[in-house]
Length: 500
Image 1 (cartoon, rainbow, N blue to C red):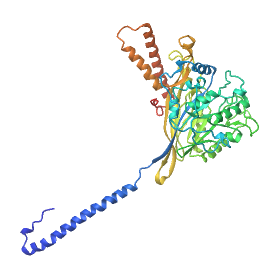
Image 2: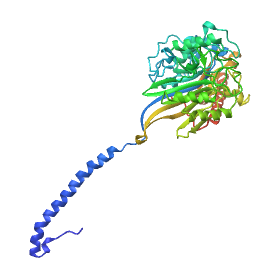
Image 3: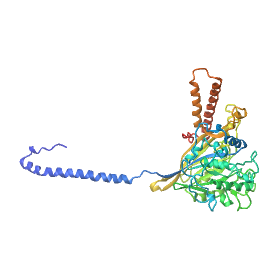
Image 4: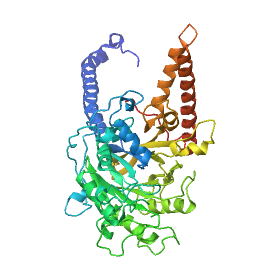
């Protein structure tokens, strides 16, 4: 806008402009000032009303691993660990007995109803000794269990010293110290719904439930009655209620009692394979899922199914998993095949993103103890390829869309189960060692050995040469097994182990 020069105007106009212009300028200035003064708080108020969605309100975290099987050799390794310094974690970590999350719930079974509708946290019980060496079995992975609110495994054995009928191939038993060690290591939930629950008879089955309650270990898939066995375990943390509904499709020729008012396992037999044993069919299972979902914000299915040593799930299990999710579950966690199977992301008809873990594989066992990478076929080593899956259930506010409880941050951490059977039998190692270890923590250890040996400028001694060869073989093994786990599970899920 051009500048106005009133000195050049006629005197009449000059007088009039001289009187009007200051008033006009003042009014314009006031309008601009007032406009700015009024616009600023209005914009701020408008911005204050806008909220970014979704907004996370709370979350509860989990870590799940596979089959815990106390083979005789595993028990011998635990006994050796009770007194041997060689049982320290390979990465030389000293796990803390304190739970990182502060969540340490009691079993719902300790209440009047065996599986109460809600479980709240209590302090971790005191710990003395090393649980007869069983703590060492989980020492390399316990920190991750402890870092979450709830750790989970499939406990594939009765714990029934009073009613023991002995341990032999395909008939398992374990001492109470196993339960104590699991709890000490951060495991707070176990599945006791699998084909070995009746290995010590009905009395041993009932005794196991008693020991789980005594030790404050939560369990799913079994109960004091047939009805209780199909009730969900519901845990609560940060205002989120997560249900666990456990079941098994196999019973090793055993069967539930005919009376419903005595301890039962939740049995969901394959079509034509029940042999008349009491259990539920597909319709009954889906009804149980719908009922369980009504008691919690998010429901997880733990199921013992599939074909042993098969790298892929059975087609009927894939179909059933989808039906379970459509019925209201948010996640399906499978076990029994003793090897890893793929993980799948599934979107339900109502738009929920769910995950199926068809098989977690083993977690602690003596399987494939003679496997030598590069000598035996890869499939012979599959039972020692394992994983721990971390995930969260998150409560999110979608504003006008409402509140939702969703699965989040799913990650599978590769594990290799150490078993020095060949070296121990040859006299190279003094004590037997069996334990799951995170591959991504072991690789740097072996690489560091090679790096240090490579710095030596003089010819290596015989001992150093042996160490170099062994470290090279171990590094090659770990990298190869990790690649195999990624191929089997799916690279979209595999993550590195967190720093200890």
